[in-house]
Amino acid sequence: MRLKHDFKQIDVASRLGVNPWTLRNWEHNRTEPRVQYYPAIMDFLGYCPYQRVDTLGRKMMLHRTHQGLTQRQLAQLIKVDPGLVSRWEMGIRSPIEGVMLKLLGALGERFVKHEQ
Image (cartoon, rainbow, N blue to C red; front, side, top):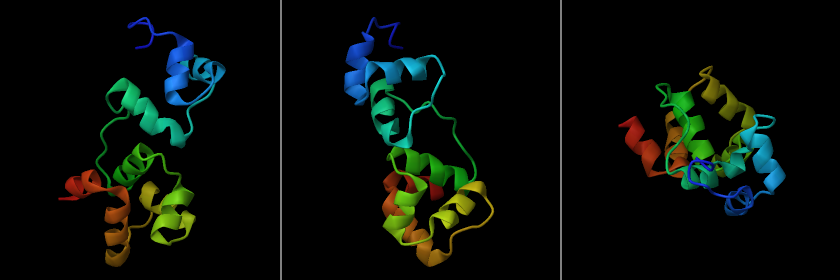
């Protein structure tokens, strides 16, 4: 997209909050963006570059990353162990009803719409 619209690397990097070398590494698939950069990347692109998902765990991961949250940060928000968030996202476990309400609050309105 950057090249298609003739955006300079330095300008896009600045908009995303990274240095130009980081952006270059992403563009050449040398490294991948950390989750904290996902919201800015999606804002720049104007869409989510990740596939739609159909499991509860994958939906949680998608909405968590859209907000730039790590598993640990989400776990702290809803007061659970980070390993539990990982197991939910992998589909090994499912959140209990009380925790699900906390998840819905933490992950926002879009997550709620996915679950209805």
